[in-house]
Length: 635
Image (cartoon, rainbow, N blue to C red):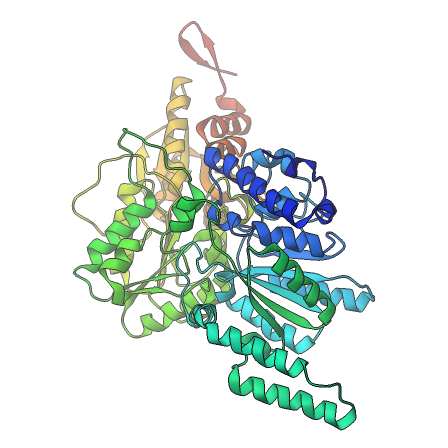
């Protein structure tokens, strides 16, 4: 059912279609989006809501000469379909397939890479400023969702754009819903504008009436303009965007292609900063998605039935433990940056509504907000994805760690996260947290150890403390009924050996154990240490391992630069242990692409096969040959 869509190889061909054909195209595009998402998952409802908006944008603007700058990418599947990627769209978010977000290397129509929210207005304004400096003439349009508009970066950019007065268009895709329900003053303002029919009617009536006045010249014309502004101001309160220096258009129906085309054409002619408020329906055209627009329908649609009992997810273990502790400890509060569902804090929010704070897509604010609560004796738990916590680095360093405030960082989605790809892999948190004084950083080997780390963090109280945990299910290990405090900076030996030692951190402990078992089959006995802490390190345990085994391999699901292995090597260098041979397993100096986590871990050498292959290369003196069934050391 892709007769029109399959014929579009570049967006200019959209302009050849009639209005009725554009409506048919919208139906085909929704079908094209649904089919691969049903099979492999993806961002579903959010993209269904931007179909007509995207068609109208490409009808009016000439991409890639005109620049369309999309925010995030949850809304850009239709853009991919109209920019020559329809024939590969079934590969989206799969290894070697299309990226789920915007990526400059993928298409000339992807003007600016987008994975984290609230960037499009800043990037678009920068492009517009560069255009002006170079004396060029093209349109720049930034498309941002109402969730992303809550981010401080977006508001900073709006403030700057209105001041510059350069021709620049911002389109607000207002579907009333982010992954979590939007919160805050901006969201409430948008609610009022959507609902206030008097505003829209009065706005039209004032402008129509003033437009019918006879043509005037000189001072009378100036007076008429002032009267129009005054009358409009009495009847229609100016929008936030107009106060910031934009020409405000809308709200417009984001599914009315004709109205959108007319609005975009008007914006092109204005030659000033223009803010267009388009109201869309998330999940448009698919009844279930229109009703349930939460993250599950967006990321994992459809839900497949299963009779097998699955282990709890790490997120579920974190949240259930936090709820358990909060029942008796009234000082525990939880802070989310628009990821209540993603971090599994829904139950906490329902059980303790007065102690749950969703601050919107505003990680910087979230961290300093938590720091403020910590000064008053509360125990704030900032539950933020590893990749998103990067956005608040200055706040972690300056507002939390410098003041040694007891803020607890629960870093979900640490390590390889899979299909969301480069912008979402949580592969840097060890490296960016480890250099900061005062903070404690730890990671569990499994879900049982995670619940103890949550308890340890809540009870710590001496300063900032962070724990990272991966996306997805745990191992199904037995869960202790009684929580215990883990000694800060102490690891554990899980397996004794004689030839070498694997020192693993967090999610790589079990792959290290599997590698040790495979080495044992070859006659090599490898000890395995669960480090637990990267800051502070268990110096006593690590120094003992170095002196005993002389061959050390560190294993971590993080970039090697500045990571856990670097910390171990620094320790040995500081203690003058020059005789120990240390090698590191981790992610090299590159960004990790999208694909199934199992595929990515295999490609990156993070599973036992890859670890084993690296060990064989590093320690050829331990390579074994076999004579019959007996292992013999190679000379």
